[in-house]
Image (cartoon, rainbow, N blue to C red; front, side):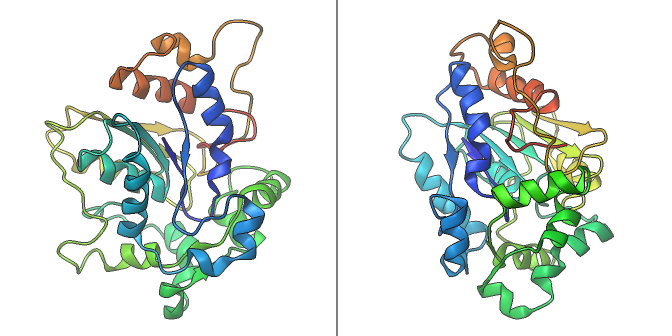
Length: 284
């Protein structure tokens, strides 16, 4: 299951869903509460996404997972990466990949680019219970800094949606709250495997934030961190399968219709770290 982050519609995952489906997996993307079926529908009704926080969104996705016959592997981006960790550590997911994940409780780094990316929400306390739509310029700084302006504008046109302000306020309150919604179980002895990816040029979730999250897990034998050089929070949208013939990368790694948890994470490592589906979402 693919989980989007703040300000990006679930349909941005469609090429990834198609890629993994073609490799033999049952793949789908999750929506957040209040999301419309399309980007346009969500933009027309921004009030529908307002007021939901990290725990509300996690519970909403957990209910979607509850309709499955088995625990899925969850791949999440930004706040979706934080939610993927919550679902994994609570036993709802069997394994997880967190791409540029929003910080879990315990991460101390707070780089200036992260603060600047959050300012459209934090500039007004009223945004805590409202929704916020980034401007093209704000989107360019937070999401499109590692691609050309033309590509950033195209990403904005195709995928940008209003998002709830509360998740950002959940992050700011985490240091004072003994049990905030960003808290996860930091023992990795008994849960499934976790892969955390950090983009070197990410503004929204700078690489040090993702790395510190990985370092919090103990004893660390079931958690892997990988830095993605030169990449920001949104990917250059290249072809998933280049060349002629042969199965896509995921299938080459784990075989058709493989279900092993570590096999799926390995597939995600190869696909996300290397070639990304055309017109989809991934780290640059």
